[in-house]
Each structure stands twice: as C-alpha cells, then as structure tokens.
Length: 112
Image (tube, rainbow, N blue to C red; front, side, top):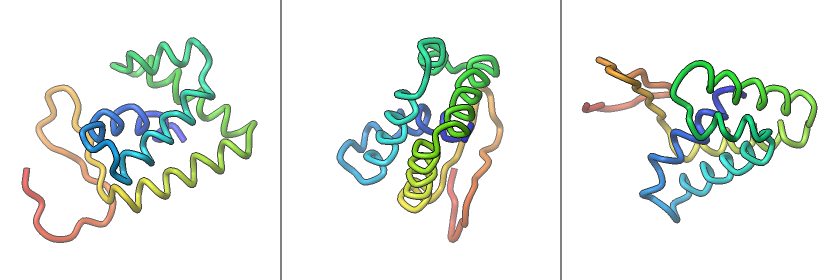
C-alpha cells in the first residue's frame, strides 16, 4: 500500500507526457483515489515528497485507509494490478543514484 502512494506521485509525473494512454489513465486513477483519502496534512506531504518524513506520512495514511476501508483497499489493489499489467516495468532512481533497480519480469535488452 505504501508503494501505491509513491507510485501515484512519481509515475504520474513520468506518464504525464502520455496523457490519453492506458498507462496514464491507470496512474491518474490511482493518484486520484489516494489523494481523495488523504488528510490535508497527507496532501501537503504528497506535494513535497522529498524525504522519508513526507513519504512516511503518506504511507501511514494510505495504510490506515486500506485497513479501515475495504472498498478503498480493493480499488487500490485493482489499480496496482492494472498498472503492473499496463506499465510492465517500473524503475526508480533517486538523488545521485549510480544504478537503477528494476522490478518485474525483464526480458530482452535493457539499455540505460
């Protein structure tokens, strides 16, 4: 669930260039679902995710919402499954990263 909060923000920025694509629609839906569940403090943290403190606030609120609202949990799980199927591979590199960690089934050549 915590990953969902971060996916909604970071992946949304990357896929913004592809507005109209299936991947962008899924990411946008995920971001909207998460934002709707956040408190004003959580929304402020989401806007400035740049460190563990802000990420922890968002992750805690998403986790709490998922525990208390089964419909929200099911929606996020469904959107994450759609994102995985649509996006395929998500890579995250932060700050002065020297390598990228890929998740998922990687086949073929990966060029950086």
